[in-house]
Image 1 (cartoon, rainbow over the protein chains, first blue to last red):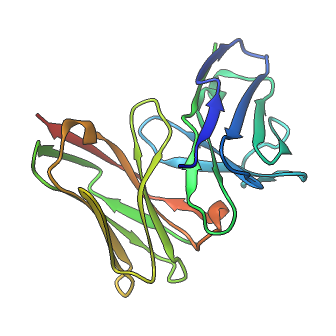
Image 2 (image 1 turned 45 degrees about the horizontal axis):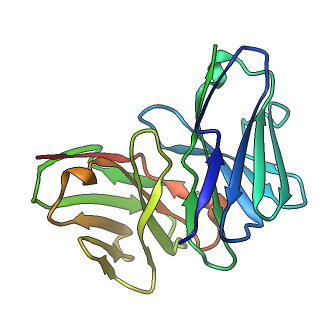
Length: 115
Length: 113
């Protein structure tokens, strides 16, 4: 079945530094990937849609300069949290779907802790 | 826009019993309804999905029913096992419009051995 790999699974960084999270589709090509943020005991909130070869589309209220998204190939999207602050600490999850009406599959998430 | 409600928020069942989670949606144009299981510290895993052209779909111990008229869909887990304990999310969208997927708030299922 379709597999989406996310790396790292957890990361701790100091306030003011930047962190990059990778999302890869392992056995299918994904022209579009999605990035979500999830707070404890809450549902997933879509942050942005990552489009291969073009700029990401951000949801209302998400700072595009803080959450940089790059979709360099059909199998890789990256999310960079720039100048991270403690309030950016959260669980970040990516997802991807193949062509047509393929189901949406999720990565295993990245737990970011900013100290 | 679409709004998805999900009940109950928490559910405890004895091992071997059935569990039912119900969702409602608001956008009559939604035609794809996936269900995800999320274990602690992991990403959501697709467990079953249903499209609007069918009313029921079953995969071993898991089944989903859809009532388009009432805009209801439900997840049924039979013969529950401790490993079924997780948070379950329903979702609704127009097929292939995954930027418009709306997730329910989730149901925390505990299966008591």
